[in-house]
Length: 231
Image (tube, rainbow, N blue to C red):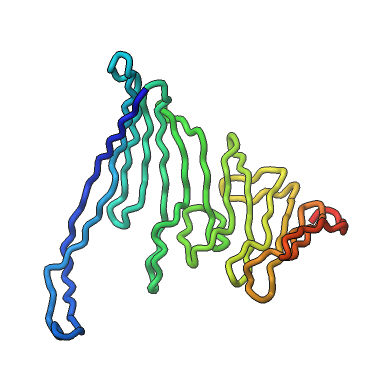
């Protein structure tokens, strides 16, 4: 058995009106014009699997990619091939480039559909405390994910952070919410405390039952005995 992989690419060339002025001797004050940007991307990847005994193709697989042109974000990925159910992964984005921000590549919703156009999975990312996936991010902090279970039911995981970007609390629920609503039953929260000096190393972790694990950095983790019930 041997495998041959072939990639296809595309490239878009865009001319820029910008003028660069050289500041370094001996080219000081020399102007450079006619600048261009080039956006190169993979459009497909194909794999051929050969039967070496007969020197024939025993199977093949193809992955095709499509992008949106404004920011170059991947929007669809379609997988097909021998013995593979064709499926397409779609990704939605809601860019925010206002006020000097450049929050343009954060995936808001990802879902997979089969060849019959039936949705097989769906995940939504909520940023900066938003309740719905199509709210453009303001800072770009992922505060919750919602995963489709069935019908109108969605599971949710919510995160809280400290000022240094560490996840300090994570909450899941035993119950389900909706496409734009938080679950209300069975909240379970785990929390983490980080060192006060570098704000990098976890010093204690508390699980939803209130069990605490303390960590010292001589390499020994000590299981705490405190129990405070559900968080």
